[in-house]
Length: 481
Image (cartoon, rainbow, N blue to C red; front, side, top):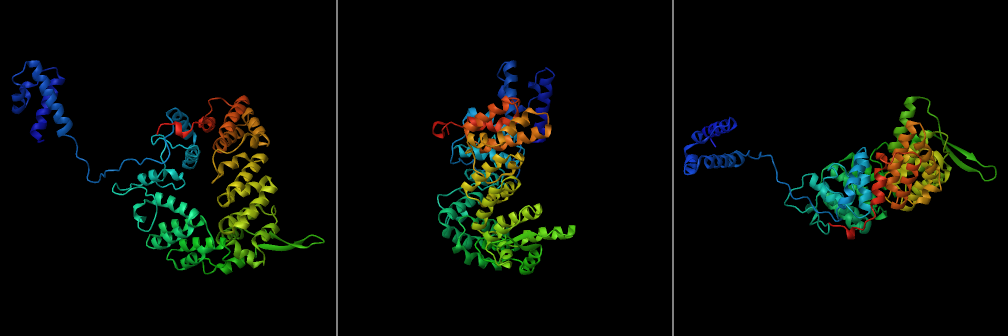
């Protein structure tokens, strides 16, 4: 449409706005269409032509950078029933960050549903979303329409047909069921990937990690990425392969770290070795010790003292230096063997109190049963309920009422919500959110009644996840997709 026609449309508009007729102002071609009609019909016809011109002819052209997106993928689970969307939105609104919002989605997925995309979608940059959302993560990342977001089986031939998140999900499943096949795929296809992607692929080797993986992990000592070499070294350390650090000065670093630890003896009849941290003499020494604990491998440190990993853990003098205790637990979580992790978790849980909360650092390495034992112990102690907010890797929706009622947590929550201490109330409300994720529906419903009776307002946003949990009892088979 040229400028002359635009000017003509502008005159017609101005005439109609002022309440007059527009027929005499119309272009000659438009007059021919409307001339044989009555004056009122002429104006209606001109109006119809003008609307068509403005809505169609003047529609702005799409920018060249605009790309057509494929339809949003359908997920493997049915959508949450419509009646549960309001409590879901309330829980999402109360969740303060992406991690807590993901926990809400994880609870929903544990009951056999996925969220409506208008209520929540995982961000493309967040890799901790429930696996069922992998197609949406790839869609968010801008997956091209000519590919499929998921195939039935991941193979070397279909590798490029998987988008990153769906590929990661498939590899995790393969590592759990056919670890050798997954390792072969990571080895053959990952070699040509950029360093960031290679690192993410190697990190997946922690699933189903076993002795058969040692040759491949050792081959990564020549990888061009320092981060990949470090990750491979930590995985080898978990398998008892010492001295495989990406840092050529690892042995010197281990010797330096060992100098921060004092070896002693205890017992009158049966003398046994003990290991206690030496108090640093300055801030610089304290910072250096922290760096050494973070960079050295636990197996290398234990080898300096001629002990097995479980024996060294049993001889460590917890309570001498809280900072050193935390560094040691993190070190075991990062590079300790499975036996060392299990031994340390059992020791900390049995000790209870502050030490039990240190075991939260081990959550990503613990099997399901030990995770539940640890959480029950923390709930029973109730010394620092807010610390449970940092729980990662826990299962959703299993906590029973007896796990709360038989410990100190329930009474602590009642006291906090009925008291006048605002800090304790805020901590209790955060704790309710965590229990809302862990609890089964019966526990969620009973806990709501308990804290409301204790004085918490029934409309408190801190109850939103508990309310959603209690309502998530409908079977997916009876819900519309």
